[in-house]
Length: 323
Image (cartoon, rainbow, N blue to C red; front, top):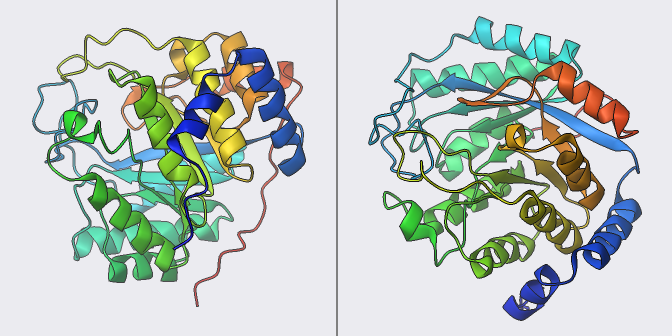
């Protein structure tokens, strides 16, 4: 076993650097590995909302909490493909489908997801899903359907994990990512800040991701959106500069990864979002909702991208082919 690429002290030292020199370095790393002015637009749709048996403290879709999100039936394939077509017309190149499940169970619902994946691929979009835990054979079936990416966030550090979620373990998360990777699907995994974690927890989460072999192709950095009825409802808002700092550190540790500025953008000014992009974020979730939380409208995002002198990444045919 080769030693991990990064130690705790190295990541913490990077995080603690003065902000402007940190941004200088992250910008340099970004320009060495990515087109200077390109941002990928991704759309995220909840295909099965609410009623999840997990107890993630941040999540309005947990059946454990009394929130304004109630359990709904799964969308049918035609509805999902229509949403994907609209997303493509608006400029998205990746379409992600989320189901509020603890884990994938074999049967008609999973078969329907496989059909959705095939339909999204037929439109020429990258297809991504987030369905909770998957085993090796399920990951293989997703790969055969043409899935490009699987999202499964670590959420926080191993040490802090139990204080956020008790219905599964940090190692369960890692096992799913291993199954996905083994099936030849790219990994999308990040976390959330603003849940009461320490700076060390933030650094550890990034270090775990950066020490993966290979590193995740996509790392979403989310700011907590506090939701009434969840245990984290009273959390204070995240300092936007903490988000900028997280993105800069993620960019330096994972030079080739697409760093996604994800949930929590509605509480950020345009300037803060531009700073995140300067720090190395080169993807945003696009569309007026993220699963069940609000997101900036498409017009606002297109104006932001234009005013920052950026362009939306053009569509490309996926390089992922199932064997």
